[in-house]
Length: 77
Image 1 (cartoon, rainbow, N blue to C red):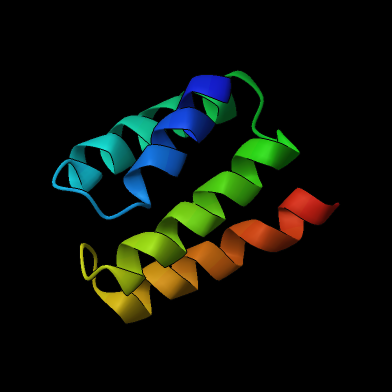
Image 2: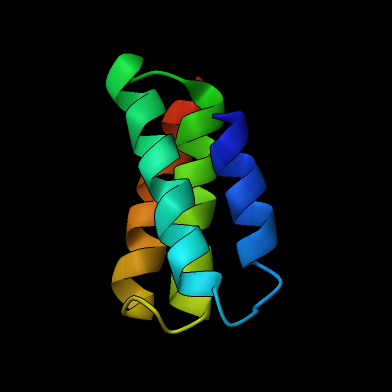
């Protein structure tokens, strides 16, 4: 999880390697969710990841924002 957060922070600086770092972060977040589907920090991070991907135009914004919104309520439970 910590490695995913680190990759995410570097990626959001919008450098040339943003896409690969965001993909790396998502892999770490998905791994954490595979180990514990209720991992609040990973759920929140994946929700935020979708938002960033939509804002950067790396995923279709409407779909990315919808997926991100779906992940946030379980992270607060």
